[in-house]
Image (cartoon, rainbow, N blue to C red; front, side, top):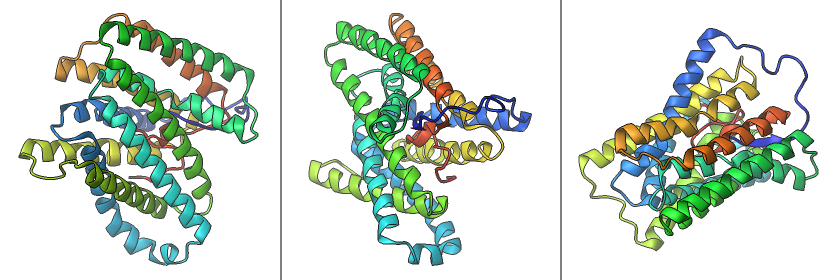
Length: 321
């Protein structure tokens, strides 16, 4: 999902230059990887918090050998501030997963993905609250996107009142994702992405494990199909999506990557329709279109964008994998 970590004006030239063809191909691969996240979650026969725990636990296990082999000295020398920021980011990431993933039990993939994609709105408001200036164009985009949110939520409730719970959880998940990106960007000013990823995912997994134990969520005893889906979720959104998109960011403008990641919204909707038979009501599509249009305006008006701090898309400073 997208997020704006700074509201400084975008440089007038070069921001939207065409990236190398190879990067465009990789961007498509990364967007496809994160687009299967919500449908995979909706299709996985495991409790929501357990899904969140396992994807982060598997992600931590995949990163740990490389991090310990290459960053042992850095990890041992981290300051209290650096450890605190990484831990806080991990907590916020856990809160994001702990609210967004359960939303898929109450509402459709289309609605949930569209609402959690509003992360750039909340990131921009966080930037405003911390003293950064939001360009006037961004406020226009925020207004357009919020109209889309109101229309989508109203349609959802008219079809199924319980969908309001899912819509609210997805929006709260977007707020936590924006806060996660904001805190994480501060941590990564002095901590390598590899070390940060290990700590952040590790803390996130630990917090979710505690939540699962307190809530009595079943963590094991799944069939082989469920375990395969959990592994697929980790390999796609948690690892492949992050790695590929961060690779693209080495040579491609964050604005281009952020705009590309917004296609997760229609991508996830299409995957859910074809694979799960979740064809969204036609009324939701114009509302999702308004949200998408508003987010495009917000992202293009921002000076430094980090869409994916959200879990289902990397942020430009986030760990590669």
